[in-house]
Image (cartoon, rainbow, N blue to C red; front, side, top):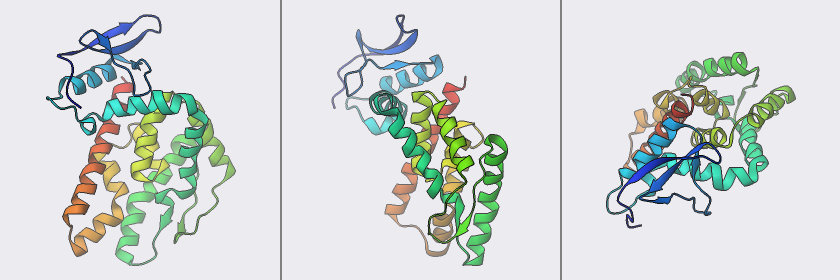
Length: 233
């Protein structure tokens, strides 16, 4: 898309006491034509900078915080319960709960990297998760599922949007919660989520396709880190 504005500026939308982005004099709207309203100043400033940083051609992939906002307003707000369920289901398939028994080297790396996070999430939220070897799905305790559902119900649509991003790219609700609480930064989340692939790369090398996949994952984790830091100020 061709850049169609000179400047992006912040403005206060007084009716709802939120911030908006104004492209010249026109308020930014979502793809579904909703007014793009932002709940906190720091995040609004960062999103405004994404729009000011665009060159002649607008490249959406360079505007991750804007995309988180679009998801919050266009997808999560009208379908909140659907997305709460989607996030909650990651508890059953959480990457950190599915370990390998062999090779021993990889098993040890998984245990050393993942087990402390399972300990943390139980201490922080009261969410106890069982571990298994293999890929057959395991039933997690109903008490833990209820804890997760209670947490999700208490989040804003913006918090849910950031959590959804971090959970999807990591395959782990635990990693997502770690980022939400600023317990994990982008580098740590990437390391935790890429344990097996990193181990394989050390053994077999890395081709250009894998490099690009990992570059995108790193970028998404950085966006999630910046987002959670902004809304916590």
